[in-house]
Length: 317
Image (tube, rainbow, N blue to C red; front, side, top):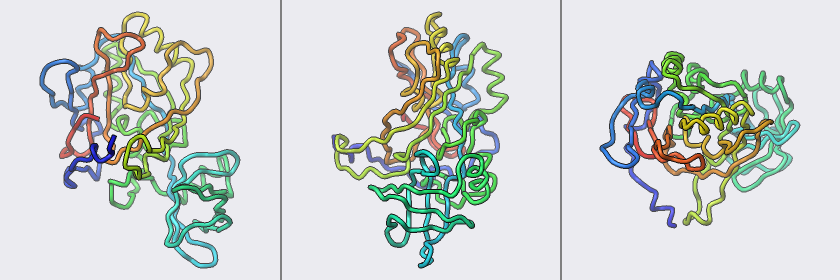
């Protein structure tokens, strides 16, 4: 299929650049699965759209300040690195940008640290950091920037450390927020619980494909990037119990569907799943199946909210 078939015009003024003061005030577009007109709602109406016995699966990945700015040792050339995935030890997969190509063996000085370019690939580099573990998290807290998506073309602000993070965030390592989850609040969660709707976490880290453009002309030629995930046994068991009693399982965005467990697990399920790179700004999605759907079927109704600004539009994802 021709990649150009997915192109569409999105006016710049409809891309939100800052969040609303209230997370759950963002607009929500409800698309009926079979018949009826789309309905314009707000995220805080979600309890009215779900029902008692449903299970809401949320992503507890926590965004780290993964963007580093520095310069090449010796030449002083500016370098920008975006850490996207740990490879073991002190090595990380990263996206790199500089005035001249980065080469293996080069040293980047960033906020008092010397970072080695260990390998260079197609649009990606392997960097060797001087820290790992808690020392690395402390360094990034001091030196790193919040990795805002490329369509939010403004410098990061101090408030982004809190607002570009979901209230579920627990597991550090994400370089992009699970955007649908950004709209949830403690009050909204309490309202869901009062309706008899349960929550269960998974951990899924958005991969580098989110940041890279689609360079292929046809979808068949596009390289799919992996995304790491972990499904706790408690979540797998909750999934199975919900389906056995006829309840619905709702992912709070599109990505958790690819890592959702089909059966009860006795140990954490971990792995990676392929993901595509969207040429347009990502949208936030909640998917829910029809009441008649089976345990093996995927949800086909998505509730989508694009952006976080009240002027942002909603669309099918």
